Amino acid sequence: MLCALSVALFALITWQVHVSGPLLTPDHALSRAVVRAVPDAVTERLADLGNIPVAVPVLALAMLYAARRGRGRAALVAGLAMALVPALIVPLKDWTARPGPLEPWAAGYFPSGHTATALMAYTGAALLVAPHTRRPWPLPVAALLTGLTAAGLVLRGFHWPLDVLASLLLCTPLLLAVRWAASAAPAAPPAGTGRAKGRVSRRSSRRSSG
Image (tube, rainbow, N blue to C red):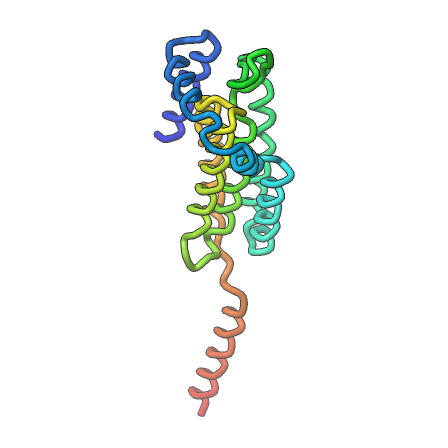
């Protein structure tokens, strides 16, 4: 249901951008109201959270961790999902050729590649790590990092709000696939659990024999 809804909304937004439909009017108004409302020095740092050299290594470390904990398939799915991002984003940028809020002479702003990179990298990493944490902190942290990236992009004028929203919708099916793979993989026991169980079993056996 969520997958179908995200695809439908993404298709609607993409169509509106491509034909310069009425949905762009509130999009432009919102952008004009918030662009540079926060100092550039702050929003540029937030937008940088979506840079490939910043976000992708986080996912790579989570993939390595998950693979070492017996979740190799989930790590592979997360890596493939991340690799699909540029394969989807780049053709859409070329096709829609949308100008930027502060650069009307340029093109290729829809959808937002930085938003997609941040969402896939941070949330993908969270889904891989979450089964091995005692508290559910990975997903809230991933949501915060993605939200900060999106806010930085819009506030700085690097992207229109719809560029960011479209990327979130586009990546939703990919993240659902990662979530499925992560939930289907067996969780590895915490380090030392097996040895502890073995010691308990040996002690029980000695008591029974005695």
